[in-house]
Length: 469
Image (tube, rainbow, N blue to C red):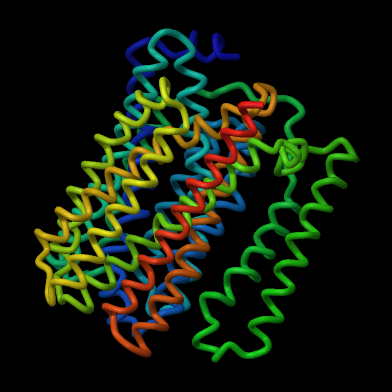
C-alpha cells in the first residue's frame, strides 16, 4: 500500500502534501494554547463562571480523546484524504461557532463539537506521513512534523496575546477562534487539489457503542468536578460521579464483548495485562495531569492577580515554549543512550522549576513579566526533556503487532489526563482563590503539580524495573 500511494505522488508533490497536513496539525496545536491566553477575557465578557471556563478547555479534550481512535479508523475505511478534508471543514465551522458564541454554555457546546471534529482531522496527519514517506526521507518528514509540534505552542501563546490585545476588527477574544477560518479554507482547497486518494483498508470496523460509552463515562466522571463548586457539591454531584465510574467499568466489559464477537474494540485488551505498558500509561497520565492545567492556572494568576495584559502574558510563555523545543531535541537524543533516566531527570527539572516559581511568588509581592518568563524556562526545559521521548519509551514495551493500538491508548490517555488536570487542579485553584487569595491558590496548585510529576517519575522507575526483568 505504501508503494501504491508513493507511485501516485511524485517526490516534489508529496512535500507539498506534507506542508498541507502539518499546517492542519499546527492549527490544532495553536488552538490548544491560544485559548488559554484568552480565557480571562472570555470569562469577563461572557460572565462565565470558573466551572464554565474549565469546561471550555476540558470538554474539548474529552471529545477529542474519546473519538480520536474512531477518527483514525474512519480514515482507514473511507480514505485519509476524504476524512482529513471532512475533519478540517468541521474544525473550521466549529471554530466559527466558538467565535460567535454568546454565552458560556454555548461556547462549551461549540468547543465540544470542535474537539470531535479535531478527532477526525488529526489522526490523518500521521497516517498521511506514514503512507507517503516510507523511504529514506521518512526521518526528515517526521523531523518537520516534530518542529511544527514544538512551534505550535509558542505561536499559540504569542498569537493569543496579539489578537486579544489588538482587538482586531473589534472582535476581541473572538478573533482567537476566527483566525482558524481562513487557514481552514486554504487547507481544504489545497488538500482537495494535491492530496492523493489512499487505498482503503479492508476489514476495518468501527466500535461506535464503545466510543459513546467511554465519552458518557468520562463526562459523568469529570463533569461534576468542573461544576461541583457551582452546585455546592450536592449529593447529585457525587451520584453522577459514581455513575461515571460504573459506566467506565461497563465500557471495559463492552470492549471484551466486542472482542469475543470478532469485532475491533477501541482498545487492545491484551495491553491491559502488559505490566510495563500499564505502568508507562500511568506515568503518561500523571505527566499530562500537570500539563495544560499548569498553563490555565498561570494564565489566570498573571492576568487576574498580577494584572499582566494578555499580550505580555503570552510573551511570558514564549521563552518557555522555545526552551521546550530545545529540550525536546536534547531529550530525544539523550534518551537513545540513557533510556528512561532522561525522563526521570526531566521530572526533577520540572519540580525545580516549580520550586523556583514558588520562591518568586513568595519573596516578590508583584513579580514582573520578565522575571516570570525567566523562571518558567526551567519548567519548560524539564517538560521538554520528558514529553519528547515519553511516547517512544512507553510504546517501546509494546509488541510491533500492537503498536497502532498502543499509540491510540497513549494519545487517549494523554488527552483524558489533560482534561482531568484542568478539572481537578483548576477546581482547587478557583476554590482557594475565592476563599482566600490568588497567591495561595497558585501555591496550592504548584504543590499538586509537584505531586503529579513525582508520581510520574515513580511510575517511570517502576516501568524500568518491569522491562529489566
